[in-house]
Image 1 (cartoon, one colour):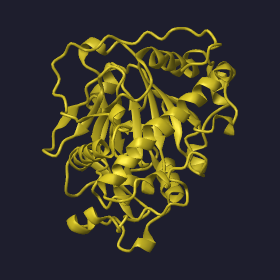
Image 2 (cartoon, rainbow, N blue to C red; image 1 turned 30 degrees about the vertical axis):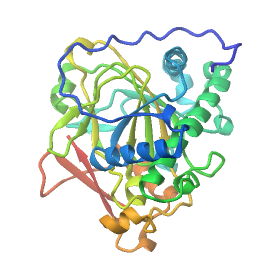
Image 3 (cartoon, one colour; image 1 turned 90 degrees about the vertical axis):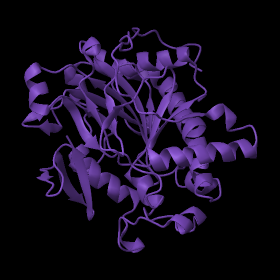
Length: 367
């Protein structure tokens, strides 16, 4: 719960939910309130998570422990680094993205190349889960106790049960994945506030309305706290793009490259993108709260071959030999530094796809 002496800050007014008839993805809904009931119930949830991750790579979580009112406060806080910090002060807290492969701090607008010379209109402010690990803008400092509490909740009460369920889905001990994501471990797991701003009609035309190209996330698990502006799409197995529907006070969960590697391809790192919102939401900004989870820096991203499930189904290896697989820190730094900055090459086999090679792996970007 927010601390009793929470500082007063401006209230963020979210956009109304779209009334457009969109082609939504049919994603599973996992209620974490059932996690702590019985071992039998956890087993059922684990099978649901395994099916969702192996088929779609995305699912919703409800019953995560924060009320709608508490989440409204979190979105009020999320807007502060954008609306209450001057441009000059933002520049003092820029992330060393290209130099150090770290997102910690600000990414200002027009840093990522989208397409045809168009740069992004997105600002992010990224906070390591240890909020004391670096300095923050003045407006955020009184809010750090609440931010710390929220990061801990996301890690321990949301990520923790999900990792346990995913380990059970692999028929491994519950702690297998949890032990690779220690709260006090050395990793880059972080909270991200992200704000998309409307673009010009010219930029929309040049990019075919794509705001962020289709991509996989870098880490193991991404938690996206649902917000009302429709813009997120996932690439379905039939090759079509499906919208992700807003569910009040839900979390959208997806796996990233690192989990794909660890699970031998069972838990899919699904391609997803961000596009221009539907007409009735285009005048609004889109404010997001994410918790990007990385395995501990020294975790080798080789398949968990002891899994009886993988032994039955087979392992999809991204590296010919396990010893060739990078550790989490190597993969994270390489992909972070390259994102939105690389010169991509056209795929010779697929249209509307560009690619780059990172750590020996072909990384694809979809228009």
